[in-house]
Each structure stands twice: as structure tokens, then as C-alpha cells.
Length: 480
Image (cartoon, rainbow, N blue to C red):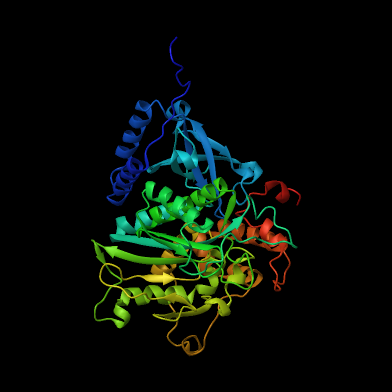
């Protein structure tokens, strides 16, 4: 009798091979290899690899949620240039009468996946969204960021770099956000605190597994550690070109949630899930190079940064209230902007004061950068990087005659209602995003705010968690 053979043989790649494949793909992006050449390579690979059953195609909506569709590999190979979906089902996208939207695959943004985290036989690729007529869709901020970065490189020879220090919490139980009870709250898995976690702690086991997955996906890990608050973590990875950094931001949160779910836990990126302890941020480090030279560095400049960097900082500070809603896009995010917890709510720059919105870290010619500390981990990272880079490069500079801006301490809005009001009235925000997207985003944030108590108070309200845009709770949203 012949031994039984498996009915299916789906692709499962060892982690060390995965890392090599994903790092090669990242290098192609950094070297700006012709996207058509990469497309042909990826198609040839998919055609030749029989163990792949599906391609996960993903895009991000206006609020920053990542959406994924699995296309049968054979269908995708025949139809990759004509992928359509109903945009009216995505909050912040098309109205019902203009619902047909298209997905265009960004072939360089292609990832091989750890099969134990994402399932065997799948690869993932990012997409941009096109309108019915084939033009870039305004609410697709990934497409907007990509076009802006490409334009800066083509017209000015500039390459924008970024890295995010994304903090999160690990809570006991699956779907802890969706199941939050006002009486019980969240349950910590560890109370070790900053830099302290025993090797067998649940938090350390989670971080080890998540770090392995992100290393395999080509993130080029740097360090990971418990953060200040109980059950809080941070895992840092390599500084990279801004669009790559934004894609990795989305994948980081996705794989953290996947790994946590496998452990019957929840990885949460609410900015302030628990009052009385430090919240979670996504400190955003940024620099710009020209012909391989970091233009933010000046060995003779104050704090070792250049005039170009100072101008970049000045424009961001000048428009900080206008774009605060983009960087802090939820009701809950304004709880984090609390000066009692090292919150970056002051509209100023400092090399040392961590309450400042912008910090200038100690750096050299390679590492000189600007750190924008007031970004929440739940922001739409494509929209945030687009807003900060464009504001820093093209936004209105401060008026040197305005003595008050230089002499008094200014603060970011303390609640989402003020942030919405300032955003709506900002001519720069309207110019930044265009009138249609500016209005859509403000309306989304208003709807989100109106589902939650107006005054924050001292307790995290169930509504601000369950209606948080990253919590998958579509049924609850549909009740309104």
C-alpha cells in the first residue's frame, strides 16, 4: 500500500530565507529599480511558484484602517490591471453614486509572509486606489504620499526618510477592545515596566514572536523592549524611505495583532487605553537627503542641524494646530497629550525637552534628523507623513514680526472638537489635501467625536474605544 501524500502543498518559507527575499525586495525599492521590471519579475515568480494559492492585496482608507482582499493567484495574473471594488462600503471613500473604484498594484511593495502568522501559500502586496476614470483617488493617502515623494525626487533630487517608534499595549484576551466593559476595563498581561520583563513573561514572549516575524519581513530590526506603562511595548526597526516606512508601520500593527491573537491576547494601539499611566505614541523621525547627503546635518549648526532643517521645523510648528487632527485623529488620542505623562503637547522645538512637539535628537551626518513626537499610533500614517513632509517643505513659514509666537508657549488642541474646528478653518489644511478630502476627513472625525462623550473626564469611556476607527466593530457602527 502506498503511503498517504498530502492533498495540498502550500508555500511555507523558513524565516531566514524570508528575510533574505524581503530584504532584496526592499533594496529594489530603495534603489528605485524600474517598477515595470519588478512587475515582470513578480509575475514570473507567481506563475512559476505552484505552491501559492492567493495574493493578499491591501489598501488603507482615509482613517488609516488597512483593508485586505485575497485574490486567487490565477485570477490575479489574468486581471491585475482591472481590479475593482465598491468604494461606498469604505468610510471616507466614494459615495454610493460614484462607488466603483480601482486598485492598482504597487509591485515593488511586495512581501513574502511568515506562514505561521499569516497562513501558508500567501504573499502580500500594497495597492493604490484609482477613481473610475483612472485618475489617482484623492482619499487614498498612500497614493498621495507616493506621488508627492516621487515628485520631490524627480524635480528636486530629494529623498525623504522616516522611521516610527510605535508603542502599543498588550491586553489579556482576544478582541479586548471590542469587548471592553466599563466596570472591568483592560487586563494587563505584565506589570514589569520600562526595560523590565522576565524572559518567560507573556509580554516578552509576545515581543519575541512579533520581532521574529517583522525581521523575516525585512524590517531590519534594531531593538525591542517593554515601555514605561504596564503591558506596554515598543519594537524599533530600520530608518527607511518614507513610503517603505509607512508600509512597515501598517504591517507592524497587523503582525502584532496577529501574533497577539495567536496567544489569546490583544495588541492595542489606542493612544491612551488606561488613564493614570503613560499613553502610546508613534514618535516620527524624519530627514531628507540630496544626492546621498543628509541635508538636515550641519556640524557647525546649532544642535548640529542645518538651516534647511530649521526651516522645515519652523513651517511645521507654524502650522501645528492646522494639522494636529491628522496626527491625533481620534477622541482617545487627546488623552495622551497630557503634560503629566511626558506628553508632546507644546508647540516648540527642543533637543532635550520631551514635552516639546518636536525634538532634535543627538546625531551625526548619517543620523541627523527631526523627531515629531505628537503623532498617535492610530493616525493614518500615509496622511501624517504626507502632511508633515509637505508642510515642512512647502508650508507657510512663521511671520518673524509675530513676537507672541516666539515668546509665549503655545499648545496643541486639548480635545478633538477644537482640533476639528481649527482643521476646518485652516486654509493650509484645505490646500494640503484639496477641498473634497479636507471636508471628508473633517466629517469623519466629527462623526467619530459625536459618538463619544464630549468631555473626556477621568475614565476611558467604552464608546471611545468601541467606536475607535481601528477597532473592527462594523456591526456597532451600522447601528447609527
